[in-house]
Image: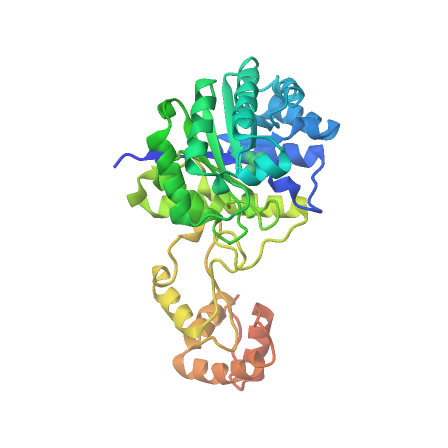
Length: 390
Ligand code: KIV
Ligand code: ZN
């Protein structure tokens, strides 16, 4: 079955970099941008050029450097933001301006002290102005997650008419349920005149832990772009995690959707971003966490040693992890101990294993995890008098 392509719009360097304490310098941003290009993302949101001279400069340098991806700069629906972004993006082979405005009643009343009609006017003016610089203009309806669908469709229709090529439907506050977000996308697909001229994009935040589920619901209902970050970093609880959506689409072929991401670079890219931002990846993080392919209970270890697929739905090699790991703890069984002992040079008979296992349990009750060096000590502590062949 041929699959529909979902574009990956990476915003690690813009929404991701908004994480307190994770600021990157220009050099670090260039290294990450180069890696994102290699990874196969379709669009790199390089920054918010009006926000500071440093951000302008980073976007400008990234625009010069990137070979394949479209380079994008964020703006508010403000002429000067757009002029400055266009300037920063000038050297890009493919440039996109990402402009927009809040559309929920909460944003219209409290942020802008405005009216729905005036918001549409500003949205159209921003897109029309951005179109004087670049062909590719993405419009974001900030807080679309809490925007009434009928009004949202009206805004989308107006900006598509003004030339928007992509319609970003952000769940800015991470409020939506997956079904609700999916139905929002479906509603727009069915009710916006001219929608065939634009790509619908999901931009989901993770305040309720639903960013990935919402993005998948979005593409299942017709969106064809996902906005995401490496390791899911971003404002508050973060953005949709790139590695999660990419692997969900790959592991579920019945969705009929795929991306151009080279998944074998996912683990390494995750580590690179984590190190450069000084932000650790939680060990139980899906796909790229240290424990994502680690097995520690006896029942699971026995299953994985017999056949990896008993407890793993992804081949670790597909995401750039060398192999599954069998972690030795007091909950491990003989199969795991024999497996790890063999890796450090001890081929134990059944009787030897029984004796080593009793010694192992005494050690393991006093330690969180048994390392390779401990295996040597455990075997030496028995009366077996055997040596490693390594
Ligand atoms: O979350 C959001 O609404 C955003 C927009 C600025 C695109 O990041
Ligand atoms: Zn966002």
